[in-house]
Image (cartoon, rainbow, N blue to C red):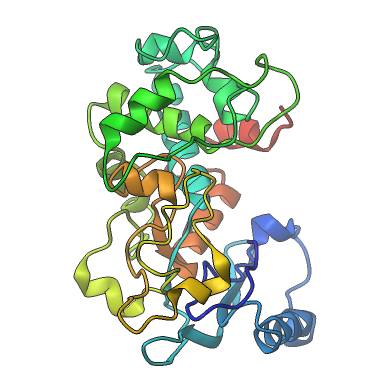
Length: 320
């Protein structure tokens, strides 16, 4: 994950090293403590230089968790809190991977969607302005031609209707199937399609079909108050309204958040697009711990059970 300059709050943080990211062969010799020393050095250096207040590092090899450790601080205001291995993070764009991609592929396995069918087939309003031929596959692979984000100026607070209106009126930046352009909008559209096809909210679908089967106990959208003490704050409340839905929501290196009457954002999504959609969106909004992510990674390494078929996981790894 990207490391932001240090601020009076922990920005999105967490060094999550897992077997899928490392591409460790399942037959590799068991990892030893000495093998992981570089990770500890990196974490200590990032904290010492002020890039992040703290981190959680979890390493898996095959189906084994071989390393799990917390470093530094979880929160720095209003009082310092030590990072713990079970800290829950705002996962931002990992929502795309864990929830939205998985949900779309599950629906494809059931024959409820076809990846090479247009998005407008499942969301009729998603048409016009050059969007008619965009397929689910193109949305998944960021080849839809949609721009990276949405101009949110003038849309204040939770206002899904205004977001949808502006998104549906949007023109693609380039024709589909050209060079990939990473876009939050691709996955916001996919999240809405999941809601329409499954006839339930994205957070409800994720809980029943992904998070609960994998026993991702702390994972979910709109975390309950009981979980707040373990959630790492991100930025100051109100600072996500930066006018662009670019997924950062960070501004001025925290200087605008030094006032004693401001509170750090904790347990509330800091992505500006997801915030305006009520905290549940296909691009961001998922909260989870390192242990939760490990459970997801282990499922993929095990061939997808119990959330996906092995043939689907193979398609996920295949270059598009």
